[in-house]
Amino acid sequence: MINIAIIVGSTRPGRKALDVARWVMECAGTRGDAAFELVDIQDFQLPLLDEPVPPSMGQYSQPHTRAWAAKIAEFDGFVFVTPEYNHATSGALKNAIDYLYKEWNNKAAGFVGYGSAGGSRAIENLRLVMGELMVADVRAQVMLSLFTDFENFTAFNPAEHHERSVEIMLDQVVQWAGALKPLRKDDPPVPVPDNMPPRGERVGGSY
Image (cartoon, rainbow, N blue to C red; front, side, top):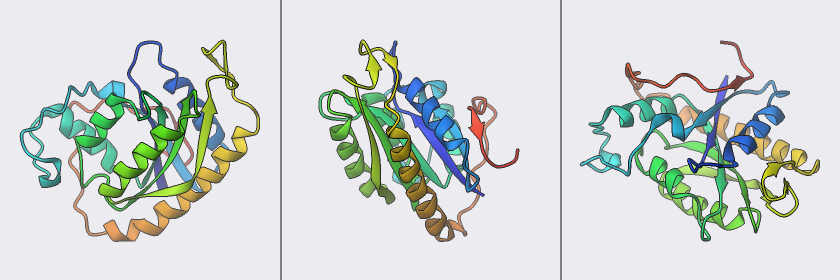
């Protein structure tokens, strides 16, 4: 079974990312080709990057880093739900990404952005980051407007046509995740630390 994480990419009080991520989970709930789990970076309480050794060395010293690494290692692909702050993704999501290296490698990623310009510039920002991490980012993306998909810029109420965009994006993420999985067949398992946060919401597969 292909495992895909839907990553909540904001920790700001009053954030909209969790509502958007749950909607993506609902859209994924009818699929039988992968298992999906909502992963909230807020649950891992990651401070500003505090590892003394570059992540590419894989020498994680902090308990929160090891918990985050173990979680990300579980997945074959990712859907990043990102707000757009000043033409880029959120600092919290970039910080969470920067903590790790090998756990991201040779996997697939898709994007759901939201903002005044549909989160398009945040998505472009993330595409550059994914290239450095050897993550294959898919072409299809979902762009949600604060003007038309959020009532009074607050309550998330996406236009119906976005569901088709999510479907196409997930199709590509699952396909690419499956294609890349053999590249990681010899990777040793990542040990699960005692302080692992509880599992997020899940759909698909059997548990």
